[in-house]
Length: 590
Image (cartoon, rainbow, N blue to C red; front, side, top):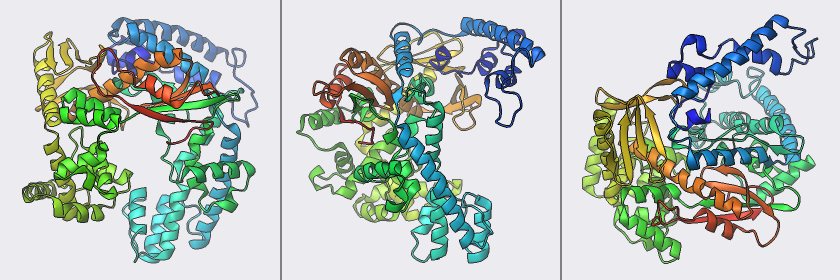
């Protein structure tokens, strides 16, 4: 499984047999899943049979044993066909370390998780009852989407295109919106908070010693090699909407069973408190550190955006400006000292959303994440944007109208967002060149097999059915069955939405995103041995952050951990790296 994932292939044996063309008589038996369900899964509570065995189901057991043998044969056939580029040397040693981390597990506050589950169950019942009262019984629970939409349009004449959070929040912000509908939508938002289900996943997986194991999947994030979350998905915890002091008070209130007396929105509290379930065991503390803007630094380094590398170094030394302020300042040709708090937020969204060839859609995604009011953004930005940029943005808006791809934005807001994209690109010429140069090189490599081509620090080569982009670390990003179809670069991969194996398109900006994230992963992964050799026990990684358990003494601290995490690798001695973190007994969003 891991060997397959490390090369951009599916991890499931059945899917892998199909992708690699394993003969049917040697492939995984598809009946096996039902047999596993029969013999390995706990029986329903109302079942008269405590468990299925060879004695209760002799024929099924015979097929189950045969299935196990076929699985071994299928794995042998798969192993013969799998490449080994990313499954040797330091990568193989890293997987062994990953297994040690997963076996070690992470200590969980089981009391908090159980209290949160009970509080959520009570709150769901209260919200359902309130919904029934407000709708005269037409809607039994706010989670009933179609019934809720029908009631709102029939009772209030309000039509909603969908029940997505962004849609509801926009309508609720309208001062002319009926107050009763606002309350119903507020109830809907609370009742449909899915992040609280993570508490149940946690409780199902936690061991008797209070530790949750198997939370990380090595190379689970496809070809970039990054870890993916499993069980309660620690890589995808919700961003807290409450201040940490409120969260700490809320955790104590949940455990005491009185959170409903102190907090109006229990769903918001339990969602914000999820990180607090990760805790230090007795006698230890959590030491946490996060690589600072590692993707931004890696992108600048790979692209050769020298002014930005210098800016990172100066900022780390305490002599330079905040990079988000600097992004806005360079785009608008003003001094970073004149950038106010709101303009810095615009700069932040520009930096996070536009580095990989993204346009209005990418900018919009991050603007919503960071709560930028788009009309306010247009008011703040448009007066300062050069006229030639606005003309170009207006022309693109007209074209986007024809393509029906304005994302529901007004002309004014669309032009503001597109103008910010253009200004960011003007300020990052080397980065833009890198997008196009990498795409040209990949196209050339696909057309000329068995020839190594170069793009900056990267080596690109096609051998048979594989395109490889070798990173400075020596690891390669692997793209199976590369081809140029109708002018597009394509390869075989897993569709991130359907989860099906199919032909996918890519382009320069997306390829740059892949190599940037992969190179950032290699920095963190390469420093794991240093961290553990210094006495910090890694229990979890979340994107570019490491969470460690350490003795509760001054000898172990976040400054020392950050220094270890930001150690320059041999293959990138000149990239500016920095990290920062905290010490705590419960994990939190820093």
